[in-house]
Amino acid sequence: MGPAADSSRDQGDPLARIADALERLAPPPAPAVDWLASPAYVWTDGAARGVARLEAPDLGLLRGIDTQKARVVTNVTRFAAGHAAHDMLLWGSRGMGKSALLRAAIRTAQAEHPEAIALVQVGQEALSQVSGLFVLLGRIDRRFLVFVDDLGFEDNDGAGPRLLRSWLEGGVEARPANVRLAVTSNRRAIVARNMSEQDNPINPRDAVDDRLALADRFGLSIGFHNCSQDDYLAIIEGYAADFGLVWEETDALEWSKRRGARSGRVAWQYVVELAGRAGKAL
Image: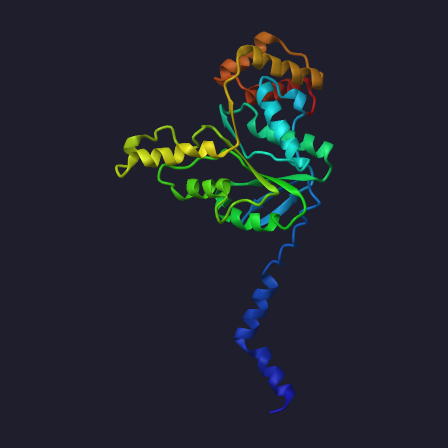
């Protein structure tokens, strides 16, 4: 049988046709990300994508958290400059600007040290893949702040806290020298409120201490608390002045009562409402 016959037989092979069809249907491999090109990245499903613009409020608009702001900005700027810097845990009340402050601090550091530092956000569902991310980042001549937002562990999750502790303490899978961790959480202990010594009948005190000690592994553990009425109004005042919006104190307070809270997030939502009433875009 000649070559022509062999070719015809190969083309008629059902398995070969299926393989060809699958190759045509399969999406092309994602291009390798350029770790020097973007101000921020998102890490998910074992791969990264660049973010062309890092959205963050101006630091001057973040009011009511002056002490926290100074500590975070100083630490991130030191890191961008190549100096010693801490891993950070930002914990406390919802809506008080923890993640916004981290993004704003990165923007500030990037203005002072262009291209020296980038933010890499990691979803909690991708925590198990962070070791692979560390391997990649350790090869890059740039500093990276790996950011996990709104972190919390379930009562029966022992692997997550152990993995985080390993990264922070310099274990086998610890983050490289050009990487620092920043975590936000609603609670300092990063565990559920109902965790108690009775949750684990075997060595319960050790189980509780093991989790609660996570906060101590961060060089900076910074609390954010519910803002006072004065702070809430000051936040609105700052936004309104920046965007040229007219507002009334009684209306702003009524808005917070309807929302059932006073926080930076609620203040921003009120500002969005003001802009909408005025027919303006933000």
